[in-house]
Image (cartoon, rainbow, N blue to C red; front, side):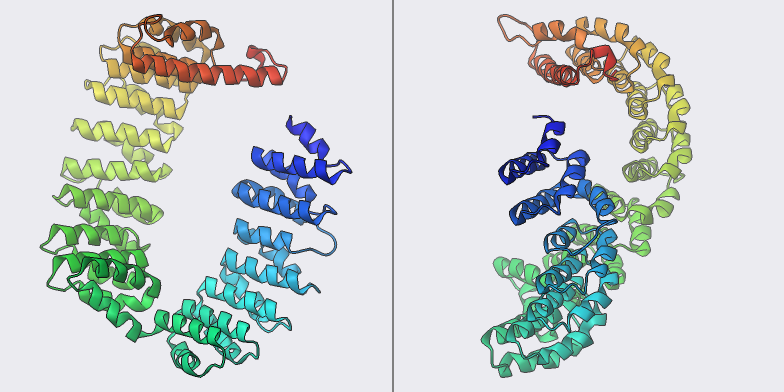
Amino acid sequence: MSLRDLISELQNPDPVIRRRAVERLGHMGGDEAAGALVLMLKDPDDGIRTLVGNALAAFGSDAVEPLLRYLATWQGPVDAVVPTLLGKLRSERGLDFLAGHVSDPEASVRAAIATALGCIGSERSLPLLLELLRDMSADVRIASARALGEIHSPATADALLDEMADENPAVRAAVAEALGRVNNQKSVDILSRACTDDPDANVRKAAMAALRRVSTWAVTPLIRSLAGDELDARIRAVSQLLDQGKISILPLIELLTNEEPTVRASAAEVLGALGDATAIDALIQALDDTDARVRLSATNALGRIKHSRSAATLARALEDQDNKVAAAAATGLENLSELAIDPVFELLNHESADVRVRATDVLGRLRHRGACGRLIRGLADSVTWVRIVSAQALGEIGEIQAAPALIAALKDHDPVVRAMAAEALGKLRDFQATMQLLGALSDESDLVRINALRALGRIGNPAAIPFLEPALDAPEPGVRCAAIDGLAAMRVTSVLPRLHKMARHWPMGKEPKEVREAAEQAIAALESALARENALGLKPEESGES
């Protein structure tokens, strides 16, 4: 059934038909289906509204824009479905709508709003949640406490501590859980008393669990286990130290000087997982450890701590003679994103070719457009491997200004540089590169011809089709595969009969396995394209695909 038919069925007076249409649109996905489903959030059937909310939540980011545009003109009361959906989508852009309904007369709606605010996890939610924490309804207070626990803001500790005197034990239990997540030392005394003095067993249990999170005495046995000889106990200690959060950091830092290398490496790994900048100095010192495992763990840990000093340190680690450490530094810099750009830039002129290669590779992974000018200069580097990685990085970044330099690199004396330049031009999808890539089809290197064929397919200039079709007869299987891929990318359906022949298995066909598989994949793509065109009533040349 087409999208139009399903959207029409959403207006059917029969709830069974509307439900079926919602389910099918939910399976379909995409922003068009999302745009239709948001209109059903006011359906008179409770079950259908819930189904719509679940479907839109499954869409994820595709549902955010149509939902918010629909809610911008919302009139009247709201039920729990909409706030629950906003919480599942975790978009801060929904905060204004939630704030506008925080005084809804229905407790179930206010509780759903509190839960949603916790899921979104923004500091902007705190005033609203602190207001809901004093709500007349116990269910709302419970939801608010749990939401504050999800946000982990120390600023909420005082308000939560006040609510440990709530007359409702379920509220006190929720508040205790939240205090455990907030990790504020001020809560230790009250939680300690609640562990023994609260009349409700569930509150005592929740307070004990929270105290394990925030009390230094709770960390001590885990630290001892981490430094012990028993592997299983150390593995459990790592997991539980992560649960403890920031309170574990100082004891873990002390373990970085433990005499046992395995303990030092484990401590570094946990500090990385905690991701707190407090550990940076100690981890930097650990990079000079005599044990390679410790250096590698410290490098990985710094890559998980979002701080400019981590980035600067990891950039220097790209110079490490241990390839594993240097590779871990590159991965960490990629994870640090924008923080890594300036320190990595400084390495592009490094005297070591290996360091220049690693720095160029990182910039390519970061896809930073501002790096293009410097990477273009890398195409003229005296070291072949630097030119290769520069071409790859420019392709990953995809900035069109790199096209002239990459076209010039098609004439490099090294075949791998030429091949990587061809591949990068394909990623840029620049029509102006067509003629030069056509010229590369006569290159002496198979790899250059293969990458040029695929690049022409990605660019999609119809002028390349007469050059790609003869490559189906090339003697090299890799070249034939690339020709198949290029023609499939351009949606050249006229080659389908030829592809069917190439996909035949022995004894009807004689193509090697890789060619058969390439042909089969191309057939599936082209026939799917034809089916879509036929469904739209288009002829192939009218489809807009090339």
